[in-house]
Image (cartoon, rainbow, N blue to C red):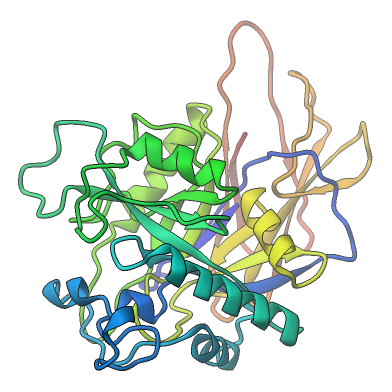
Length: 368
């Protein structure tokens, strides 16, 4: 389930996808955090913030002039910055062309230290894997011809070849997804409709956990044209085609922590394992305006199921109730629930919206 606030007209879009069978547990709660955050390893100054200690510097970033920051940050720096913004967790995705296995282990070990020493914050290490497109008809006008995959919480470093170029010869897009999944990671297709770093092979691959539907604008006066509206339409089309991709937001910051967008993860407690499980299993809301989540109840069980759950419903059943709950909405917004149903033969489908605790609800479609 995902939530997008468009800054201009403040329309809030809600999409709910029912997945794994996990009933609502009252002891759990929502924790705010950010994804697709880069540490200093993805900057010229490096993890220690110094231009003069070369081993951790990513000089290839200076050639892009995409985000000319003058400071690199460690996990401990970013944790303090994130907490000051109200975040309880971060998920890091340093560029594979900037990173090696030793540096990934540094991030992982520092995350472990944060997780053990600070009960109010946790984080997941990972990388942003550059992969070769699996299709040959890459847009001719595009400057870059590689796709990016988020590899969240991977157990081991996933390589690209050559190791220090924007556009590698290998791994391919599908091979990259397989490598992330086999390394116990959450595999996410990053900014698939961006102007340069898009994902031309997205219709050819399978098995990813999800898609980044909101890629945050970069700072320092530069605009990252991620075409987020197009990504949302793409994601909905995938769901209707039976591809169960979860939705994620990402800041894509290469400097200090930001909450230009954030994710709310539903967990019983704030730990690395619970965070990874929530992201892997759809208990995540993308937002920049409070929290909204959706539950479903069927008369068979007479209990509410949290988003990310799978509930068996037979054709012709109308005794299904959907409830949207919102908290901390700072700007008035409109809630729209979408439904997409593909059927054959005879049958009918009906879903009722529960009116309590809803504001200006426009009940449309529930995506299954």
